[in-house]
Picture 1 (cartoon, one colour):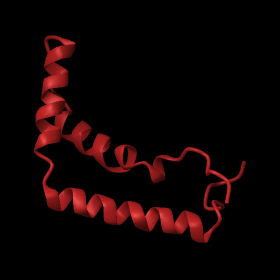
Picture 2 (cartoon, one colour; picture 1 turned 30 degrees about the horizontal axis):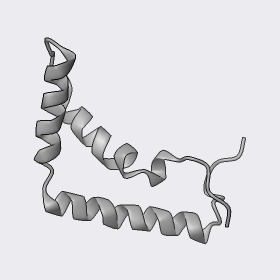
Picture 3 (cartoon, helix red, strand yellow; picture 1 turned 180 degrees about the horizontal axis):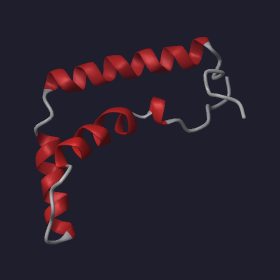
Picture 4 (cartoon, helix red, strand yellow; picture 1 turned 120 degrees about the horizontal axis):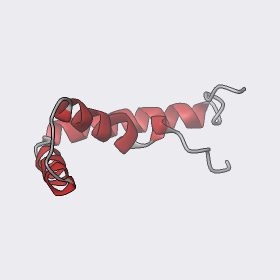
Length: 77
C-alpha cells in the first residue's frame, strides 16, 4: 500500500493534542510568545496517562479504518 496522503485524522497531534490544549487556552492572552509557549508546555505536561492511552487507542482505530478502506475513506473531489 502506498503512503496515504496527509490526514489530520491520522495525526495524534491534530485530532487529540492540539485541539485539547487549544480548548484549554481559549480566551487566554499572553504578554509574549514565550509565555504562550510556557502555558502550552504546562498544559502538555498535565495530559494524563489515561488521556494518552485513549488517544493512542483512537489512533489505532483510525489507522485500521484507513487500512481496511485502502485509504479510500478520504472524500474524492
